[in-house]
Length: 417
Image (cartoon, rainbow, N blue to C red):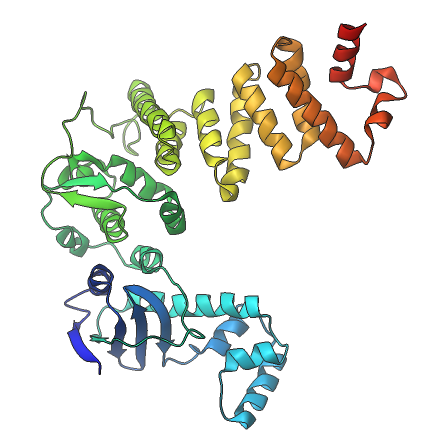
């Protein structure tokens, strides 16, 4: 039997605080929220959101599938008539079994539907709520693994800035420290640039008060810090994590909107972020390194090394390889004859597929640094990839006009002659 373990009004206890309690206690049960014209129910298992239901008009699953373009209105009307005649079952399952929508499209649409309902509740300034704990399990057919942290991150972004978030942070003389989090967890939250920068300030030696003062908007920073703490990316400490070495202000007139740029300060902070990022790269903390390197690039966009290291870190994740290509290109344009950069960029291009562009870089690399066998091997890989793209065999590549042979072939011929 369910029992009410928390109740109140969202006016007095904001939704993020209610959800934080459920997440922290790994609660299982139903959060019921009511306001005039609508009731929302969020279902949880072990602190994670699984299902959401709303009584508001246009909040049914079929409405969401139509809005997302996953099914036509004609097909939905026909399915609804058939489903009504049957008198039992679930509409989504009927849509799949009748061939009107694929299983993958239904799952994607259902997940978005649940998230949209949950996110809509973040806009409620008030409304009665109660959380009823339950030991039962949800029907697997309607339960989805939805990250409460990821949904709440987006929801908190939608809440207007206010002094309430400053109050929710508690003692401003505590220290904010970036918590140890997995790369996958950080990626799932999809931090925006301002959030990533604020996270980089949470070094365990800076007080919450100081971080708020460093930010252009105190209230915006308070909301972001609260969201970072909620999602587990930041922990608030009563004592500093470690003694600060060479303490310097992390923000200055270098990026103030109201002051003239301080180029020396920009360079100093960018260099500090870069050195810390190199340390994180050695520890394989790629996400932490990316956050710092992005700031280095922002402060010193003409520095090839910062773009180069950022590209290498981004390339570790398949989803971010297009951004890696962008930074590799910038670094190469700024420093087109650096050996390490040329080799890594060409290797990246070979893996991505534009072998002709890689071939041009590697030919230049072999010409400039002919004694390094790594470059010769990479050129051979480029030749092989190009032949595969063009449908040529190795014999075809060696025949015909000698001027059209690869540089690798000509070099090898000279050495063996």
